[in-house]
Length: 390
Image (cartoon, rainbow, N blue to C red; front, side):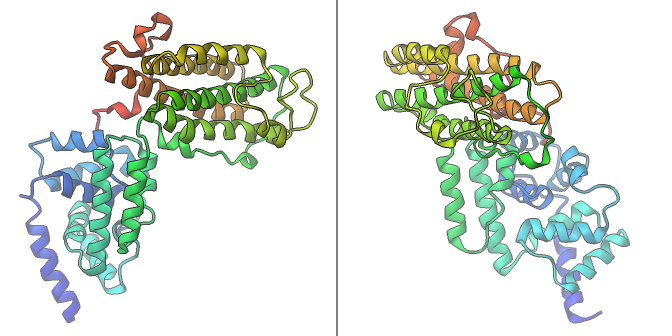
């Protein structure tokens, strides 16, 4: 056995032998999440594992292999070589050198160590630039948890470009600081590759649903920004600029895909015009009932900060009701279904953001204080914390 392998054997023995007694804490669990799932921990998931006081860190690493996410990422047919390479790339953004890979694969093939023991040994054995990269990723993971987010898509995205360069760390920390976790990161960055969808013929009702939802998303963005000028708040500004802008774009992409006109509702056959939509003035809409609703909501919202949040509750419930109706009429058109589902998921998040805003002002019942029409405790709350295993 050469000197490199002898040293690696000694180091791995010391590392592995210390794992069984190691108590789980936020930092070492964050590293385990990075190594296993290639992402930051979600807040609820980390909270769950920290409450499992009877489990050591190695026990938790073993339990990770029982999780659906882990089984999807590493199917049973995956080889030990594939897993070794995956863990190194998850942690350090590179594959192991030939000697290291050969050593670990041999140990795993001979069952000298388990997959969970290997994972923790690599985590604890990081040196040099690898240790710096892992430290940077851990800092990001802990900040993500502190933000309270349970958004899995975001937890993956923020880890993608972190290196040993401190500038990559600062860039991602700024990103976490500036994103309102009550407004879903996925919603703000969602996109559909429409070329992969069949171009099913749209019925007149389906064309109208696209036209209506584009205008309704425009209403949401503009009412929030106009009210934010009077009563600045994180909810109004972030939801408008992070999510509603993207929602408008999602619907407009579908309008362009089908090349229909949504500024002249009487004649959809006129071709799509980006300039017509872009030049439509704030508070102006091609659908009269939406323009009337905008005016009504604006008049209500400028009365107070509380009223501005109440308008948010009203807008999001209206969106969800309309999206439920339009989803029911989407038939088998998957492009419509996926687009409207993304919009509805965003509206669920926004509803709870405005609910939280009202409660921060002392309105104990939040959106429910308006009336039963706007009280929807059944709406999903993805960022409120699912206590199940993650």
